[in-house]
Length: 562
Ligand code: GLC
Image (cartoon, rainbow, N blue to C red; front, top):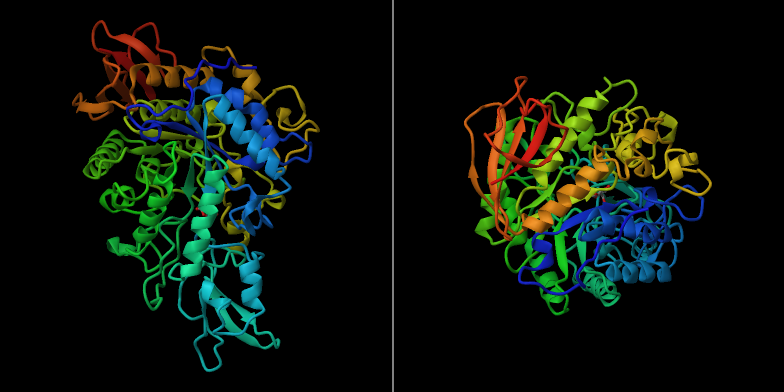
């Protein structure tokens, strides 16, 4: 259904590929289902790689596909070297990697080092072994407080709600020690001060590098090392929020010891050819602290969640863009932009929420419902800001279709552990994980041959289906294609932001210079009044159609030549 662009082979260019790459996040269970069970799989992804190549992205990042009981949609890994049968077999992974490379696409896997599944053989062995045993030493088992150890070892809370500790019975059946889980109780945290843990993960990296993968997204990269003595911390965790009240640093996040782990991983990756890369999922503030993850001997990229979290206001976006460019430049790393992923409300929906409200963990049917048209308009405008910027950018599957969050999912269909651990008071992340619509007039919008979908899709998804957008110049899909083509042609990813323009409080305006020559003036109007475009401006692209009056209307981004 899409044209495969001519792409260069995976060659090493003057600037390493990851410095400017547009990387598309595939959430495998919701991308494309080939066998009709309602859950997406690897053959489904492989069959759609030409679509991604035609979109113009450089790489795909796959959320975890390893063997897992799926208590947290695969972020609970039972075996890091085996593909879960739900997604296919090991040979399906090889076929996917080979086909991606044939099309000129790199493949980035998701590595989950902070915790394993409770079904991992190490954790089973730990449960079968007594307190103080070597089997328990690879996790964070501690005695409880209180007279008979009946209270958790400290006051930490799980990111998904509830306490971060669970008590286990000893081999003789009596209540014994507690183990730490920053997430669900099925996701025990590993002890990263243990040499075996470090050796095991280096071996897992080698296993997949040898299979040809181009890099890893490192899950919870700021969480591996905990402060000595596990001191109390009484605050409720927001989803992976790396800072505490008044800028204090919680004892479970962003401890200095994590950097040693990434230095040794970098050495390992550098021993391979082909510019393999690491990207940190680290919810760390401020930007200078995040930049420590991308020092020259550590990771290559770190997601810029400050940009994702910025309010839809020119001053907020300007500060977040400027801070990020400045901080990453101090360590010589590219900025890494992102607006949506599988953990946050899709930006087409999020950007309609009140600017000063905290980012919600999901939206449910009883919450105020977003204005879908406004969201699409703002979402497209925000994406066109992001894609003009120097550095690398991540797209989350479906954003190229302008998909909104599913905000009315029936409660009984929800699967996010955060929903259960908050006793249904927090909607959680299922609304951004709904299977993609490929064909407007097929059952399940063409997600699977049987029409089955593991989460129900909203009726409105028909309007967003890829096939109805294909070839329609006004569609979001064609806008993304045009933007990615222009970005590549001008070398915007390897370019620079040369100046901030304009003095109007309602307009965000800046000039970028591409490495292939030429400047682009990027303007977004946030105010109610139309903004005037510079006389004689040549419009390269606009996020919504411009009126005949040639003015820039509210919530529209334009790229102007010259
Ligand atoms: C990361 C993942 C998220 C997962 C959590 C625990 O934040 O992105 O989906 O639930 O880690 O692994």
